[in-house]
Image (tube, rainbow over all chains, first blue to last red; front, top):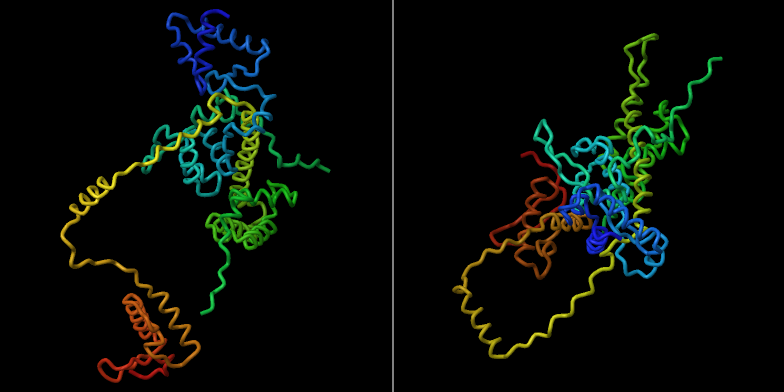
Length: 182
Length: 243
């Protein structure tokens, strides 16, 4: 590997979270973004082809070394790894609405869900999945929420635009085709 | 005193376990009946909705009650006669159908997100093995002299002994009221002693006394005392006398 690739490998190994492009670039101020990207690809290729137990994954607007999928079961069975806590359906609903409508206020979330959602939003904030991004216009200037990089990390997404587009969703209870005129 | 059977408060448990809200429950019913969401048989769905929230104890949750009321209103609006060829008429179900479709999209996203999160959980990053537990702190070594000196310092800090302290004690008037009512249900006449018991505390006496006055005011009982410091006699439901 090139010296820059080895430097990136070292930094990415030491980090316990995804390093963003800015962070990776700051490791060598002389190198341009194109050079850094090439070096990142070099690291990824090395790990992908060299027979390793970890791989370099592009996630949450950054890069991170993760264990390869085939070892999930064994590591899980050994029970020393911390498993992320699962999100309840209510939390996921709220998260989905915030992800698609951000920046969005509590009232709009509640209107779509049809239930009080303040406590769920607080819990999502506690877990670092959503944050207050701005204040809205109108009465009381309500807090508006958006998703965090942590949200992308939990879902294993690089960017928000990896979420399915709304028009791609199959609506299971689609209205039946109009009846044929007799 | 017999305990009043209280219905178990399980509304929220059910909500968490099965449905995340009234829209979720509605969608569940619609799927089960395999009816067309855009042409909702409101009367049928409303009846089922009410039946389920009664059965599951969800009728305590305001959100479910609000939806029940909405369904009934739509049902009533559909029953109103309308003129044939009335272009102004708007289907009262339209708003609800729009919300259901929107919510259904959200549920589909939730499924997608659950799959994505499960897939992400198959990979571990660094830091997923927790820190080893910290070594237990060394046992405490205390010299007797140090302990005594410390005790002296603490005692020196205590201000002059307080002669009067006001401690708020909660009066249990409701409890006393319930007790008196229970006693009167069995007997027509009570003595003060029966109400407060043999070893009454100040709080018990005050609670019982306030409860008695309150019940007397409501006309549930009468109080008699022949002279100062005489025994108080409590009688149930007196015949009303003209004042």
